[in-house]
Image (cartoon, rainbow, N blue to C red):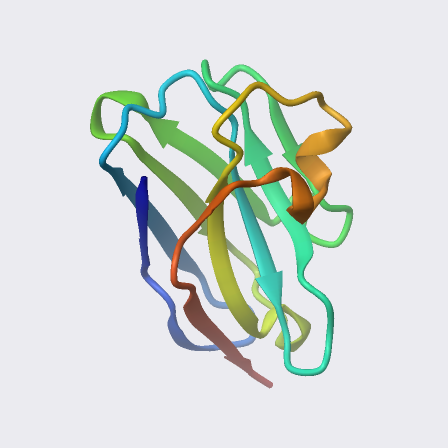
Length: 126
């Protein structure tokens, strides 16, 4: 499985960006897809995840109400719409797939994901 993330960039505080993650090499319609982020000097942290049908979404408290995750299974693509961006959202954002069914608790843990994209940089200026 190859994951290609795109859509990052430089934006002012309060602005918006939409990240995309396209999967190839394997159909991922049955699996959770997630977004994580990592700022310099910090650990990788969970941002959002979505189940295979799109009916279940999960968000970190820090992004709830500002970010929206969605997916298009026919395109094997997951999206992260980021609104009201803050400087503390600055990080490299990674999409990831576990490659097997995982629980609602496990979706929060980077260690449960088997496949990772290359990351896309998001920089929010104040």
